[in-house]
Image 1 (cartoon, helix red, strand yellow):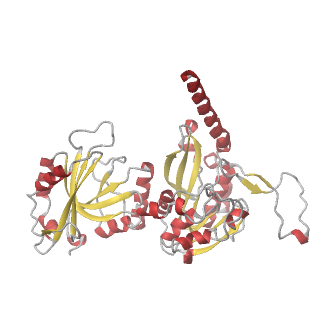
Image 2 (cartoon, one colour):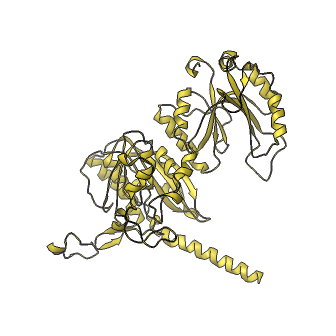
Image 3 (tube, helix red, strand yellow):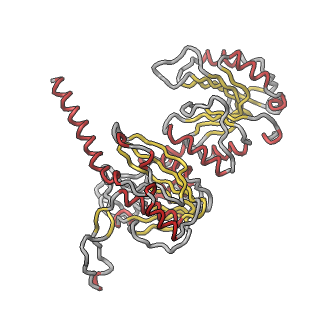
Amino acid sequence: MATSNSRSCLQYLFHLAQDNLDFRLAEIKALLALRGKPFLPCENFKEKSPFWCLDGLAEDDVHGIMTRSVCAKSAFELWGHGRTHSELRASLLNYPSENMRVFMQKDSTYRINVYTFNKTVEFGDRIKKIDAMEYLPFEGTVNLKSPQHIFCLLEDYGTDPNNIPEHPDNIFFGRWIADGQRELIRSHSVKNRHFIGNTSMDAGLSFIMANHAKVKENDLVFDPFVGTGSLLVACSHFGAYVCGTDIDYNTIHGKGRSSRKNQKWRGPDENIRANLRQYGTEKMYLDVMVSDASKPVWREAALFDAIITDPPYGIRESTRRTGSHRDITKPAESIYVESHVPVSQAYHLSDIFSDLLNFSAHHLVMGGRLVYWLPVYRPEYCDEMVPLHPCLRLISNCEQTLSSHTSRRLITMEKIKEPEELEILAHLADPRFSPYQGHNAFREKYFSGLNKRSCKEDNTSNVNK
């Protein structure tokens, strides 16, 4: 079969899932960047639409994207499109015949699927739509079970389920290329994970973070707030070597109370390594260790291809670091050093993000990416609240709404230069890079919002009574 490299005028249609809408563009751009390709949308591109048409790609590029994307459902080589079936017919008849011919030969088998977005079409009507495309010069044999080539007629009825138009807004026809990796969301569900915690990251978001970070085979990935290792699981799936740290001894060693329903204590083999073993990627596991993210424990070197993390927000996990407010602290006696637990103090969110960016500037390789979650109080949010660093360029800022008053932003940054002594001093003096202190009040504002909502519900309840 001829490849797209030997044919001309190719465009590709991506069918996107309608969840995590704000993350889709950044994921597709990152996966294109992995292949050295720019994001070139066709005219009339709409980011919130379930269908994107892209230029400038080869079929190998599309396959590469679809072997990783959890935001894309399917991809097609686009042969024609229009707002009506007559426009679609004109578009298909104008499509270069040499691009079609190789898939319509007498010795080939094929199948045509009909997909309608935001509208259910009866089976009989689907058959009529297929029969109406008899003008296409198919010479092969129909095979519904295992055809060599699959074609798809896609009708877009908009995104408003309460206002479905009688006729589609757009109609597309193309050759199916590949499906995305939506199955990973089910197969790696936290519900079936061997080792979980109170804040284990959702499987779909974990893979999205790994894609935003451009994690690839043989990369070295680090998570400084590793928890139960959900992000390590996703990165190891793409062939990266993974490691992490966390200040919580019990989590790192898989001890203490279980977060699983109807289970009081964690079992003897509930740990991060066991999670990777569950998915067949234990060989990519380097190690994790108990460590305070605010303290320097790594040698001064660019070590990591990506740093991916979900810092604690102070809601379900406390924000603590080792240290004391006292001027002088008494060291542990030598016989107790090994079992000594140091005192801890509050670790403000502004300090967490400042330390995280500084650490990334020093320990990411050039071009390496930092991907992390930033919790925000929505009524006060503005883009200037996102922490910046002179050695890191902001790539994307995507929102996941948590409630009417809170959300978290998935921040992706890329290292563009090495830190230098003079620049560090300038960084400290530049107000653009000053930590935003307002993040420190996130916990109070979060619970304040809950209390306000609770009061409204009580008032409503009283009125109803």
